[in-house]
Amino acid sequence: MRLGKSRTASGRVRRWLWILTALTALLLLAVYGAPFICPFDPQGQDLSRSLQPPGKEHILGTDQYGRDVLARVLSGGRVSISSTFLLVAVISVFGSMSGVYCGLRGGWPDRLLMGIAELCLSLPGIILAMAIAAVLNGGVLGAVGALALVSWPKYARLARSRTLALKNSPFIYAVRLAGDTPGQVVRRHLLPNILGTVLVTAILDIGTLLMELAGLSFLGLGAQPPTAEWGSMLSSGRSMLQLYPWLVLGPGLGIFITVVLFSLLGDAMRDCLDVRRVP
Image (tube, rainbow, N blue to C red; front, side, top):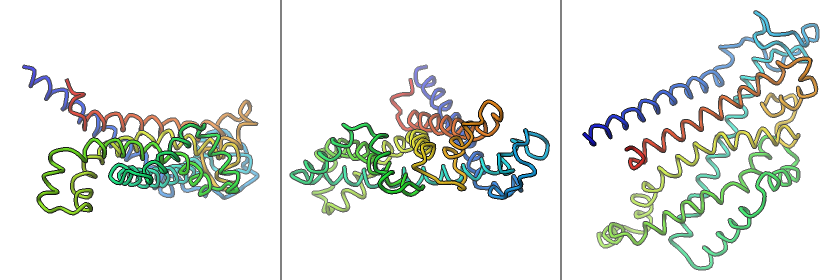
């Protein structure tokens, strides 16, 4: 009976994961297929149509320059999500490889890199990212670089702890005695055992980092006008929130939906990979 309940719970977790995966795919399809969904040019200005409320022609209305808000939300989503994916890829790969190297090498490289990681983690991350982004003169790549410099230590510590736990395991000694080189040990045995944890952490981080990127753009340290990006759209529309709320409703909903979907997707993937969470 207990085995049957476990299989039923595991089946529910997998179905929920597939549902979230499908919803996330629909979101990405809408964002990256924006030209086929909304025919308006996100940068095209028409002052005769400025600040029109939502209607049949412009579903989310127009902004102060007569640009279609829906077209700009979809285009801004492409910028926001793409930059977040780039950021997560950079910090997860660099941080994980640094952690694996520190766990295997030890000695002064381990102390140096982990000391830098501890220093980054001891400081307020978003404040440090704002300072770095200001030095880099803003821009999307500047914001990505600033957040990358303060976000990689988490992955380094995670990968290092997993490496320290695995490197003295009996199966690692066995594959070394079988003739595997250190590179083969890392590629064939350490990385596959670390990948699941890193992948779940990366997916859970997408929502958090997307909000931080939007926050930097909101403060003028990220994407610059006229580039459509959710944070900069919120910044440009905040002064007209009471009179023209649709200017911030679109990008705000875009951020909310994306963060919720990727957070739920990360949780579902963690539940699916970690069999101990299934009763």
